[in-house]
Image (cartoon, rainbow, N blue to C red; front, side, top):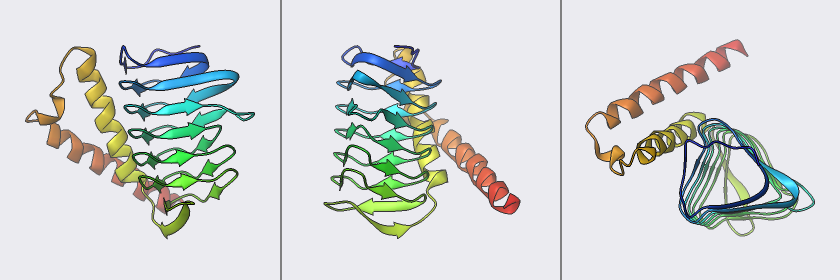
Length: 187
């Protein structure tokens, strides 16, 4: 296992071959198991409370700037960069979630499902219900968790309530909006 997360809760349990990128945060009661394959978590991604990340015959690969929210199960699947996987969602073996997507809470993405980039997915089974580039909102959410992880690492559990925090959010929004605009103009 190679990792040095920004912050990892003492109650998190990680087993097997797991690679965590820079700025990753692992929140309370997370379980990750990689017995016969590997798990890769991209930079600035947060794995929130009670999430379960496991492998199958496929590795589990989660991109950069993702939020895997409370009670999610990710099982042998691939999640692109800048994704938000909603509370209690399940992503099954061989599923592939495209970059800049949102999977709504309580959604179940069935085995082998391929979701295109810039999708909003909902339902049981999960289906694309809208198309929208969620790059900015998902990156801001990931950075909010990174900022919170830095605070937790020094024992500050109230970072989001501090006076300068909203200014930071607005700064990230402007930065990511500019990045998105530059990407669009380059294409």
